[in-house]
Image 1 (cartoon, rainbow, N blue to C red):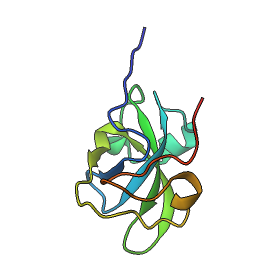
Image 2 (image 1 turned 90 degrees about the horizontal axis):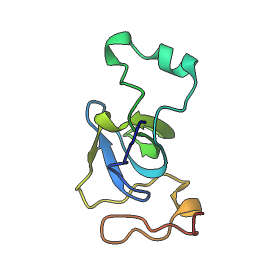
Image 3 (image 1 turned 90 degrees about the vertical axis):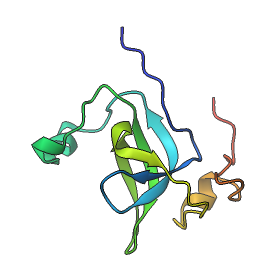
Length: 108
């Protein structure tokens, strides 16, 4: 039986290990749960194993805001102390505090 524990938590700010973007975690899949088309579109040499947590991020880079889906192996904590300016952050989280965002609502 596969047992997976997420390294990062909801509201935490993380940074991509290889690409210049950062974001706030708003959901976690224990294992890969996107489409095969999405996975196959990744360069073969860059495809992460599916049996690890994958994170949904409200992401930002210097040019835009978007939602990203990233494997745990490609993330590192963002210790900049800076908030994420994604326009959807206020819909899910409270005010940025102590380097993280508290959830607006209680999850099941």
